[in-house]
Amino acid sequence: MKRAAPLDTAFGRAAIQLTLVILLLAGWEGGVRAGWIQAFLVGSPVGIWGELVRDVSNGSLFYDTGITLYESIVGFVVGTFAGSLIGLGLWYSRFVARTVEPMIVAFNSVPKIAFAPIIILWFGTGLTSKIALAISLTAIVALIAAYQAAKEADPDLQSLLVTLGADKDQVFRKVIVPSALPGIIATFRINVGFGLVGAVVGEFISSQHGLGHLVFTASSLYDLNTVWLGLFTLMAIGFGLYFIIDLVERKSLPWKLDSVRQDLRV
Image 1 (cartoon, rainbow, N blue to C red):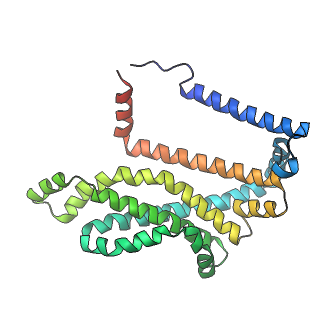
Image 2: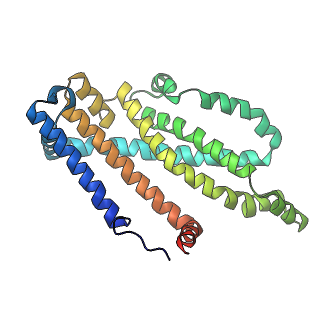
Image 3: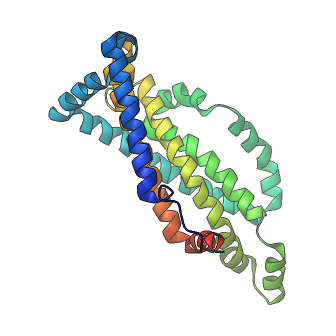
């Protein structure tokens, strides 16, 4: 087995990443204090820390984060589940799949953000419109990924099951779903980000709460420290959700992890 270099370990990489972040923040703050960087235009780490302490103390950051997190998670779950279900269902009828495929491509070619004003007009300015926008972003990605994965399922294995007397439902359960599962779970990583984008964009356009509203309001007041606070919080949410999806993939598809370990062996 190959021996990893001292820095090529989880702890080593984490130490390097933390060091780089500290150096970046230190250089940023040093540039502001030396007058090389205008704090009015880019903010400063000390100012961002002050905003963090204030918003944590009054609870507003937790509230806004909870709103955005709720909208993005519900949009991700509903959109991914519905899209995957429809995508897999298209396997049952090649005629239906070929009929609706141009419509799916046309819908996917339009930036989903363009639908935001219509969605807000239909569902109002509350949580429902933000969730609906997140669903519109995640569902189409999940649908295309699931349908493509279903089409690529092993045809020989399907023919073998049919020869042994299996009906279409049995082929679907025994071959199509297991074959498509890795592709569907792989889209989770993408859809987590899309769910967050949908929620934040909806908050940009019309909202009284949420991190999107926080960033939009702060930017209109040229409060760059609060803008950075909102952005860093969104980064933390995205990182946390990505970590959860990675954990789900490891638990759902353990054979992928085993194959990686085999590749590391000599």
